[in-house]
Length: 606
Image 1 (cartoon, rainbow, N blue to C red):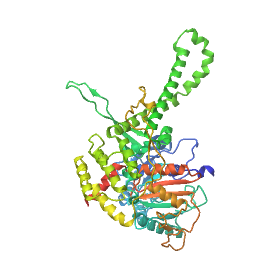
Image 2 (cartoon, rainbow, N blue to C red):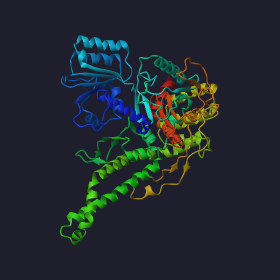
Image 3 (cartoon, rainbow, N blue to C red):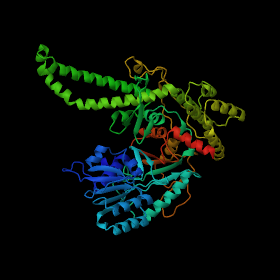
Image 4 (cartoon, rainbow, N blue to C red):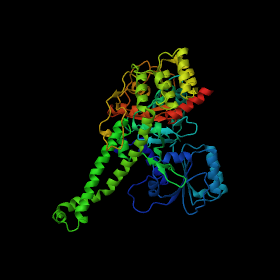
């Protein structure tokens, strides 16, 4: 029972996928004998759900010999069963019906990522009848898995209209702000959950062991917030490892893609840059270094990589020394006298070689990733941006003029400058005067910035001013701790000279603060007016008064309009201090600052 209770959303979704791949029968780990060989057919959504959770090796262990996209050209394999994992779209249903007509496989196990409508189910039944393949359609399942799990406590929606997240388990209490997109989603979700609870045939809430709400007997809290409550955080230059990787590198579905170039190569035409090699690395829960340091400040990560490397070198030297004593020194007296003492040591050292090699692989991986991040920090002065933005957001006295940073050709890209100015504009209690704004706009234009995002933020700020005051980011900030010592040693992989060793102080961002108010049942003007929905009540109402007066043990925070790793990490740090409490962070999409700026730019053009 305790193990089941501790299962994270990542573990629960992995179990559900393995059960699906095992023909919807629970997968037993240590079962003897060969698995049943089968093919997996998925669409892009299915591929995105599976890839962060199951490796190719794990798929093979489950008996998957081939995994193919539904709309690719596929040859018939008439003696093998096929497991389908797709969205129930018109296009997908047509292609599945075509597969039945063409008799591509021995049998068909049809799994839909979200619930299929009755009319589409009838289309499949008619196609199966026409193709005389009714007996070959072995199972049809709604899996309710239309979300991508990236962390134990983080998910992103992947359904086409991004309106609702389907999940099995306890019926939540829903809270949301008024007059926002989050409220529209809450109303629809409340209605959908009510319909499910009244429909005896529906299996959404059947006490399934994969359900949420297992950490306690109390129902979970679902907080729906709108991206508009905090537009500064998605633009913020960050200082923690995972958020930095997502901000400055190509990082998608837990895979980072790096371009590596090494110097020049000689050719008859003279020296020319070497072709860039593209390398991909998976940053997964198996990677202990990543699990431990993804939320750490970057200088700490650089120092830890260096320590791991030195520790590895010490172990590697020990293995080499023992090997040398045991065999390569021939008739050396030392070898003979030390033989009995060192046999056990050598056996132990050699048996730990695979572990050492895996350690070396992870050190190399993080050396490469951290080096790529460091190049961006140094080239763009990201430490300066991070520290300055923290001061703006926490209303601390600024030590240099904003105009100076915007005008400095060596400080960051045009996008960096735009991000900084937008944070200043969003966080200001009072917008700058027209004369000052014109001066800033000229400096931004001269620096090569596109002013469209500012156009949208101006409109948003005017509207938000009527609704409420700007979001508060607290009044604490980063502490510069002087430059790093250890990682500046000449033997270090990282030349950190000039980069500030900034230490983060825990300060709740707006989303975390809202969660804290609602989870702990605190009275606060920021959240007192939040709507309250209980889908178990016979009649819905427009109340803001919670019927439940006890603090919640478990909560889901869902950001309508997109989330980011900075917000996620802030929630993770917050819940660490709350023993026995659990939170889950979800968002309609996950974007970095570059993607968010593009969205603002498009909105500014309208």
